[in-house]
Length: 223
Ligand SMILES: *[C@@H]1O[C@H](CO)[C@@H](O)[C@H](O)[C@H]1NC(C)=O
Ligand SMILES: *[C@@H]1O[C@H](CO)[C@@H](O)[C@H](O)[C@H]1NC(C)=O
Ligand SMILES: *[C@@H]1O[C@H](CO)[C@@H](O)[C@H](O)[C@H]1NC(C)=O
Ligand SMILES: *[C@@H]1O[C@H](CO)[C@@H](O)[C@H](O)[C@H]1NC(C)=O
Image 1 (cartoon, helix red, strand yellow):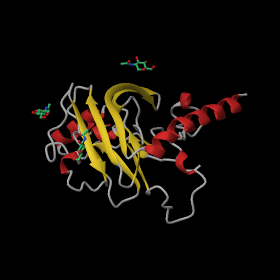
Image 2: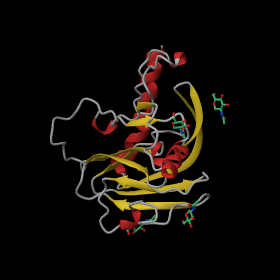
Image 3: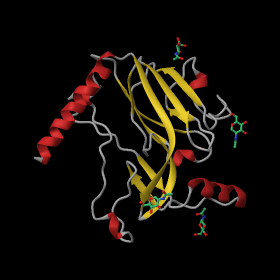
Image 4: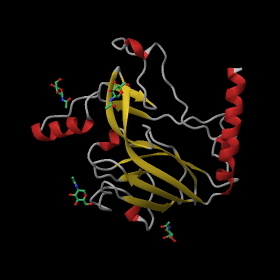
């Protein structure tokens, strides 16, 4: 029963996503920057996230698509987002480094990143580009080839996005501020993560024995 429920849900998901992937030349995303109480390693803290998730949403586009990302800042920090690896041809102001290509987005404000992906394919990364917010404000960018153009390798059976990162039990802004004051290296993280989750940890019994491996996104285009 459980199994068939899941496959029905997945089919619905695929049906919902397909029109967007077939039609779109302009990809619209809304990134709400919000705080989220999150528990890892048996310890909770409030983190800065996009849409309440860390990693945040995977951004999908095809080569030559225009991407419009509306970022709304609901947190107390100034925010900006960098599309790491995207060549900003004639759209330097959409690149994201705070105080370099734009004033940061202030609390309560929003900004629309508008850029076209030209001459590149592959999986890249977006992340906050101010303070140490990238510790939790990050996610993947998947740039597919133009429709009808195959990958330069056999089509994979399935695609899974894997984001490797780190988790600090402390507030990451406190960690970097402490290091900037003392001039010493910042405290090392408490765990490495796969898609936001550390593995099983002996000092944290409630974490269980399961290795978390969350499938963020399947590339339904190629199913
Ligand atoms: C965050 O969640 C934990 C575990 O559910 C809870 O104990 C804690 O009070 C929450 N903290 C905040 C600030 O909501
Ligand atoms: C936030 O950014 C604005 C410019 O957009 C700047 O004037 C202000 O000082 C920044 N605030 C902080 C706390 O850095
Ligand atoms: C995005 O940029 C293109 C090209 O400069 C422009 O024509 C379009 O109006 C922009 N869209 C938005 C929503 O700002
Ligand atoms: C950094 O590590 C030191 C030594 O363990 C600890 O005393 C300090 O509280 C840590 N700083 C933060 C911001 O967690």
